[in-house]
Image 1 (tube, rainbow, N blue to C red):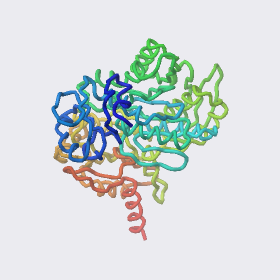
Image 2: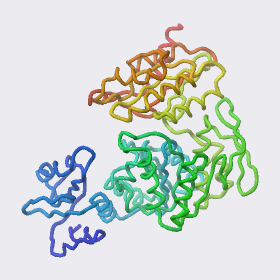
Image 3: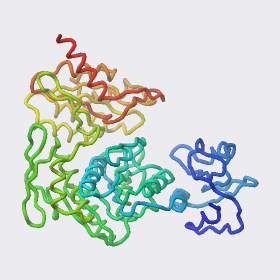
Image 4: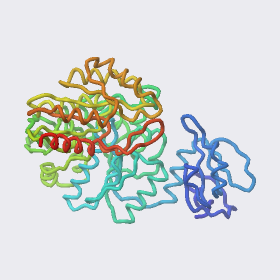
Length: 484
């Protein structure tokens, strides 16, 4: 595509330019000959620092917010280059699925978009979900390693999905992605909101900024007269609903206090929950094969999103009764000879850990044992809070490492132990899991929290292969072998 054609969406006139653009990127390592390199401002570095590397690899145009003099290279200086990059990406990769749903919130995004994809599949709709777990379509999942991809990767993915015949897409909308304008140019039909609790305060200066970033989905990204489905069981949900209405959106609310789908009763079973809810003035009962009340909220949010897209209520109800759980979200990886389950979950925030432990309690006759840690180079204020929650909600706590990154792992564990001083400290995560599995008795439940589906452990800048699910299964085999 000619550079002048590419610039059309942002109103930059380069009518005499004959430069051909073969690709876009904001990562200098991915530049190829003929690429436009977006030198964006970052948290600690500026993309301009990497312009020499980009030029060396063949960049022929630069998009930035700082004036730089590069003879023979087109330099486009803009006040908001992140927003412009999204516009350029949507021009370079113009196709999108015709119906796109975006879900934001602290917890539950991955489960909600995957549950929605399952409802669509049951209704004969060629849909996909995109987020932390990757791109899921049918029985296949392509791992991507991000929640909301950068603008170029996102529009490239949308273009490919549309080319493959996908008509419906459910995607996660992270606070980072919204604040950094990555989703600009995505044509949204419906937006969803799960909840809002403490997370990412290493990136956001305060909680107000965190909320303001999430709120952009409803106040900026959604077109007026679009639709919104919001869990209003918290003050943040109610506030988000008000913002959506002020935008002119058609608002649909769910939850215990929902006006459109209202939960009346949740009764836990061994591996499922009986749910009574009201829809259009009539009570309905369904057994949903998921553990944890928060999963019911995710499932009903997905149900509401499907109903907003004209999937029949009967089809939605049928699908709720056979939903499949999401990888790394209260995922059962095995059980002992006495049928004590071992569950892996992604919970890595105070609210997430609290909900996880509360979810396990009604299904457990014996002890709830939890293994967890906290990530390095992330919000340090949540560490002692998570320790206190574990001490209050679990019967036995093992504190271990969880992606310490560049921080001293012992310091992270010490911060957690301030909240749970009686916990057992086992630095090696594999050993912690082995000990947790070995101590299970009949009626107990073991929760391995924090990493979920992740397959790596980052220590001092090096990613080591590590999967809680694999380690849990290995510990079970070791336990079985010891009994022989």
